[in-house]
Image (tube, rainbow, N blue to C red):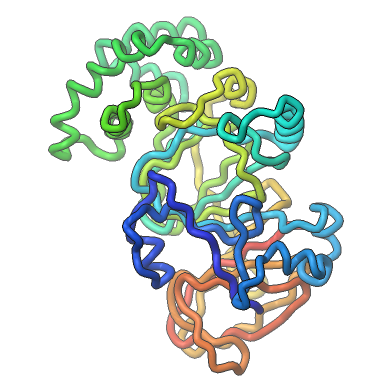
Length: 393
């Protein structure tokens, strides 16, 4: 296997300590929001010799990726593995189907849409799996109608919205709130933020309460000189999930979601296509958002891992682009890494281990590329936790 170094993204919502500590690097005084391990054009990993992973694959696609992946994904790695450190809420967002992504990308290419105004950075879909590395909070899908209406009825300035939801249904309601003027949104939302600011600052509102995140995002918007947007109302009609360490959530096409706080591993199709729905200053293309979102109420759930023949725990998802498998090794345990017909990326999150008989020790934050059909032996020095990303072909 070959050592990999990923790319750190310094998005403003990221934390300052978790990823530098994971990677045993010195914090640079700016956020470390995401650590990418893959070969996306916006950030490709490098090998220990400094060569880009994309170049390494181009030299021998079948030898690195395997025949089936090369045929199915045009000689490209089909997934992107990330570590995220979420300090502040991300935008509410939704991802397209493969067909929607191809059509949207082609349309924006034809129209020469500037990069900063694009929804589609590539022509791929972006289903994604997240595994919590800490207590994690997110918005995931639309809540059941009775829950959403109850949340809207809590505040004097949103009670009329509750009636509108009741009368017109989810689809029309979402279209309505994204069509409201800045002045109308401020009239609805400013009193909610102002009336609950003191309790929020005094830690008198639980993170399990949507109000906590509405106020947090509202205060951040003001600090940044931004308007209170419709995403704050979306907080009241979406499912607020608490995910404990080790649990996994899958987000398919059309499901609106937003990461709010915590650290996770994220594994997705190799894409950066995001259609946003507020909570941050980033572009909101209302027309495209309403076209892509699935307007359906869901009950959020976590995935249950299935035991594998080699002692791992695999999280099966309804797409073939990727799968995630967890391995826990005991001190001095030797683990024969089985061959895989596709390329795999291994990420260590704790412990120390060696490969085969070499004298190099590996530990938390280090990543390795396993080429298609390659085998090796891992010897654990102490308790080791590894995650393997691979194709599900």
